[in-house]
Every structure is written in C-alpha cells, then in structure tokens.
Amino acid sequence: MSVVTRFAPSPTGRLHVGNIRTALHNFLFARKNGGTFILRIDDTDRERSTAEFDEAIRADLQWLGLSTDKVVRQSERFDLYEREFERLNAAGRVYACYETQEELELRRKVLLGRGLPPVYERKPADAPVPEGRAPHWRFRLDHDSAIAWSDLIRGEQKFDPTLLSDPVVRREDGSWLYLLPSVIDDIDLAITHVVRGEDHVSNSAVQIQMFAALGSEPPEFAHEALLVAAEGKLSKRFGSYGAEHLRQEGVEPMALLDVLARIGTSQPVEPLASLDELAATFDFSTFGRAPAHFDPHDVELINARLLHHVDYAAVADRLPGEATEEDWLALRGNLERLGDFGAWFAVLHGEIDPPELAHDERLLVKDAAAVAEGLDWSAEPWRALTGELKQATGRKGRELFHPLRLALTGRDSGPEMAPLLAAMGKDRAIRRLEAAASR
Ligand code: GLU
Image 1 (cartoon, protein in one colour):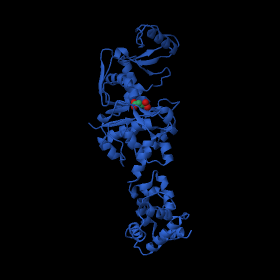
Image 2 (tube, helix red, strand yellow):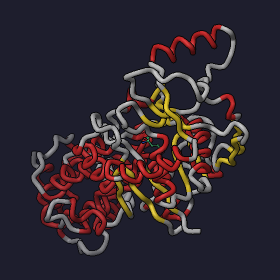
Image 3 (cartoon, helix red, strand yellow):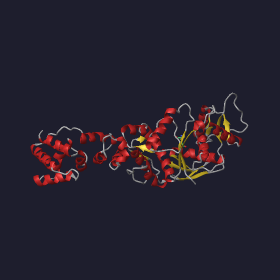
Image 4 (cartoon, helix red, strand yellow):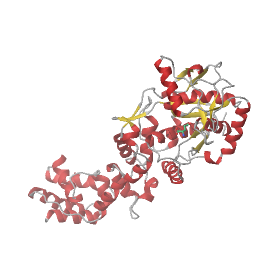
C-alpha cells in the first residue's frame, strides 16, 4: 500500500505554528514511506475563504520546503459531493430536517435539565413537514454498529453511536459543512492516513460511519495532542506566529520545522539540516498524549545551532555578493540569525574605529603589528601571532587575546579569532593593529 496523506487547511487565515505542525507531520510521514502528500484547500465556506489566503498558504508551504505532490480545492469538487450525497439519500443515510436553531437549543436544554445526554432526537418518518421551510440535512448514524479504531497516537478508541447526534452535513441553502465533503475527498483521493489535531477525534467517529456508508474502508487515523504555548491556548498568543513572521525575522525554516517535528514526542529537538533527516526518524509511536509545549525561544536556539554548521553552498545566495566561503566559515559560528552576517562581514572587511587601549595594551598591539609583518598568512596566522607574542611578552590568556581582539575587530567579543584573522587578510590586520597602537 502506498501512503497518501493530506493537509487540509481552510483559506480563512494564514498558517500558524499549530497548522504548520500538522502539515509537517503529514509531509514527513508521506516522505518517510515514499508516499504522496496532498494539499487540500477546504474552501467550501465561500464567504470566509479568500484567494489571497489560498495563495499565502501555498507560498508558506513552499518557503518551508513542504512541497506538495498535488493540490485540490473543495470548491472545484461540488459535483462530486452532489453525486455522493444523492447516493446516501437514495440509501436513506441522509435525511431532511426542519428544526430551527431555537427549537434545537430548547430541546437540548430540556434533555440536559433531565440529566439526559443532549443527543439529537430523530423525528418519525411521517412527521409533518413545515410549510415554506427549506430543509437542512443530517447523516443517519448506524446505531447498531459500534465505532472503534486503533489510533496511531491515541491507541484504541471507542464511541457508542447512540450517544452521538446525527451530524448536520448540509445547510438549508445547499452549502456543505466540513464533515461529509472531507470523507468524500479522502475516498476519492485514496488517502491512507489522516493526521490531524485531537480536536477532530469525535469528527473521526462519525466520519468512520460515513466511509462505511459510502462503501469504503476508513483510512488510518493519527490524532495529535494539541500545541500550547507556555501561557495557554496557542491561537491567542501565536495566531500571528507563523511562516510570514519567521521569514520577516530571517529565521531558517528548518529551525521551526526541527522544533515542530519533535515537541510533544519522546525524541529530542535537534538541529537537523534537512527534511529527509527528520523524515527518517519520524515515528507516531514516539508521540505523547499530553499537549506539546511550544516556545519560540527553542526556535531561536535551533536556528543558531543550524547556522553554526551550515555549508557555504546552502546559504551563498543569501549572503552579500562579495562574501567568500572563507568569510562564511569564519563568521558562521557566531551567528544567531543569518541576517547578522552582514554586520560581521562589515567588521571583517570594512572600516572599524580603532578602540581605546591602555598603555601596556598599545605596546602589545604595536609588537603584534611588527610580528604580523613577518608571518605567512596562509599558515594559521593567529596561532603564529599569539605564540610569538606569548614568548616575547610573557602575556597569556585573556591578557593576551583581549587587546588583540579589540584592536583587530573593534569589538569586545565575537567569532573565533583564528579563522577571522585568516579571512581578514594580512594588510588589513596590520593596519588595524597599527591604528590601535597609535591612537
Ligand atoms: N479543514 C479542516 C480543519 O482545518 C480539516 C480537518 C481535517 O484534516 O480533516 O480543521
């Protein structure tokens, strides 16, 4: 069996970390199994769905590297839904209802007041049809067939259909609610695994009966625990924390994906450089049942750790044009964001203000300039320079290194000096040492 997964966002907003995580898990599971990953745009709600969000969702997925094998839109599939609905109608599995919201609400209260479960009560077949009122439609659950599945994350799941209301699948105006089109699509697209948030568990229960009513085996289900921020519900605080925000901030997509792939699982969050590495280790059995805690700080940390090892070739097109591989290797170990590179590149090859040094430090950097003159820059100049100065002056450790760093970079701290000095070049290094000595 070839694995087919789908990510099914509604184009009513931008993607945020919560749904990016769902997309990622669907992508990784398909990738791991050499399967297919489908993007299904759930745009049956014509009023709230927009072409802009549809476009933005696809752009965000592309930026994240979550490439889709196929894109379908529910709004282009109404004929299919109509045909399948007619089939269910002919088989008596959907039926027309005429209650108003108020009537339903009142009935609910009465049942609750009597201590009964507020389950929708079917009307007898010969109940009078109110005049001039258009029906909405419910799916008739099969009360005789128990609902059970083995969830890839939650384990054995059981629902008693007599305790569930027949779900509304179509409104008075003919428009579709989410439940039935989703099942029709999952069958039509041969989805093998439905991976989504645990807020859909009870939807899965009724959808399993819809699969059966349409003559299909249900797919496998994996309902993941929800994502929460340290301070409660994610949607409130992180509604805007998504691809767009991270892209503007100059964060690497892999940093976010590394965090989202592993939080809430028993696997550690690690700075893996590619989706293939994440896919290779993807495993539903490592997913926990407790909410996954998302902390943007983790993304920052992983981002820095990724940058410290990334090859020049992978970032070259995002660096200033003149930056060489040597520059990259000299500076990457000090970066938190790729955007910080420019400032350090300027320190390396631009002009700096000579720092103010104490008298003895000025003497030291003066010696350093003289020593540097005689060095072969292609052979570890920092080691040679500090070695000779140590011999000559007896200074060591911070006493030796700190004034040199200040004179050579104008800064108190920064990248490792050895590759930095090599990349800076001999002439510039000597000029800086001399300028600091004579300030
Ligand atoms: N559009 C639905 C949602 O975003 C899809 C749920 C599903 O994966 O079936 O909740």
